[in-house]
Length: 453
Image 1 (cartoon, rainbow, N blue to C red):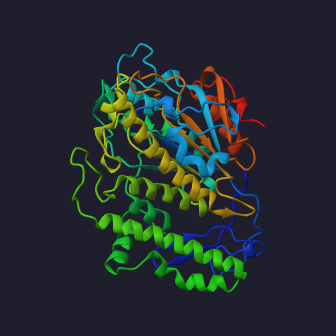
Image 2 (spheres, helix red, strand yellow):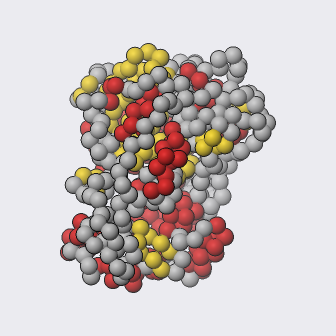
Image 3 (cartoon, rainbow, N blue to C red):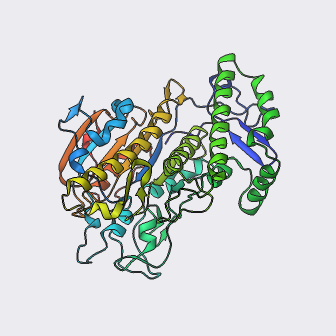
């Protein structure tokens, strides 16, 4: 695992903002503007990992490229990824066997979320005796999370529930979470972009953090207002090129902050009453997804964390997509019975989700880091643990892997793996490249050799 980069931190009234790495501060870096120089700063960029879950499978005919290897043609659903195709690997053929019933009967959607990052068969229960497995993100966080302020970041766009029966006798905890720190402990996700923003840039936690945020809100002040003096002092130590980069970074932070403010000021008009939105989150689902992607970019850019998960929607979500003229519920549509009209709507939903992924990857690619960029130094895994929502099958899963892990992945390819290859083999290979190798994850049988050059 790479050593943690020492970064300058700007501070003000209850605010702590870690900055990206700047070349002109590499020798004699300060840990806080105006303080004594810190120790030498390693220039090697750290690796990051993010895992993004989408529910209900996809329309595979519009998802799967027709040709293998480099230079594959993007099918309809993946077309929004054209700007980052060279940084993208389409992985066909991976399987989550423990998402299958294996004697437990119905409940495929709950199993699909639970198994997505664990590769473990969840215990069928709607009670408190839930059991799954430790997820790959938490394996990495437990090994290397001490290097950052937050070991990991868990995000989502649907609040879900932590108890009760959500799918054929399976606890709602399975449907609402993909991160598990132990076999019996799901890691709850944050659905409010403002709360994530405050958590990332606040010096304190809990009630004290909330009080500081309330004070800034009452004063109608930006977090940048409280670190402006620190920023001015730091700029005196910077080369002109890095001064421009700092200005661009702070402008980007303020732009995200303003979007959060606008989104939470919106009223409930025109909101789809068939789906209950978590409180204080954007009315526009696309903007909600993009803000959560922005939070991951900021967290990686400022080295607040190097590990993140995001559920674009909970397992079995029946949200409608009126923003793309699909009024039907997603889960209902996924039981399409090969109806062409329903399949067309499924493809539109799938493409909408992929467009938000493309937004995330493009922002990572456009964020410089040393001689490369954030995407080059990341591994972003996107997909579902159900292949076709109508069949509820768990083989030939729709999985994408973006980023090059600092040059350790031969990206820009469509790869077909052998039938029944566990998806956990991909996780094993990702952990190797992250610098946190383990003997097994879930039902893994080895590494995924196809990632190699």
